[in-house]
Image (cartoon, rainbow, N blue to C red; front, side, top):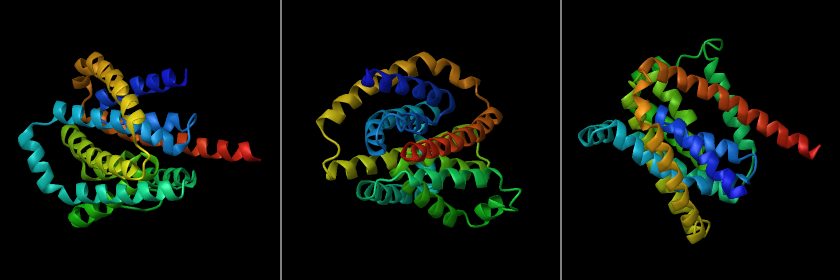
Length: 253
């Protein structure tokens, strides 16, 4: 029964990811956190997330564009992978729900940045490469810890004011390097074996079904709708993770 629930979560997450171009690990991991230990939830999402990232890149970007994106955003991809390596090691050594709390609070502050007189846009534009380094490293660490690097990347995407196609390409290429780093790290520690690979293969089949059903509707999401979707996703999951954290605390009281 538990496996069926997990696959159902993957199916719904894959539908959202196909339409929006992002969100599979964020949605699936956040939901699975409610029924599984954090580390287990993250490990189970690795293979289907990898598949969804490849599918999104193939769908939204041409091969020549991928090379150009790699050249321009190389710092972001390199340090997101390095950050993921750090985050995965921290999770294995010190598993804790406190990481969720820190992330949720940070996102809520960002979404209310005007009230705090914070302006990321000018800084990102003036210090582009340094911003790629910072956002890459932080998003990678967050990705390694709680599988939600999109929350950090979305902030960068919004501040750079990129088109939907470019934003999706950058995010999914980042997710891809993140997943490779995570899988390598967990495998090195004996946390990722044949059982996880088998369940991952079944998960990919479920995600492919969702992709096949939903793919024809993806072009209806305009650039403007995409940006609104990013902001709404940030708000919803920041609050969702925050509530989840405090519910866990109440269980121990």
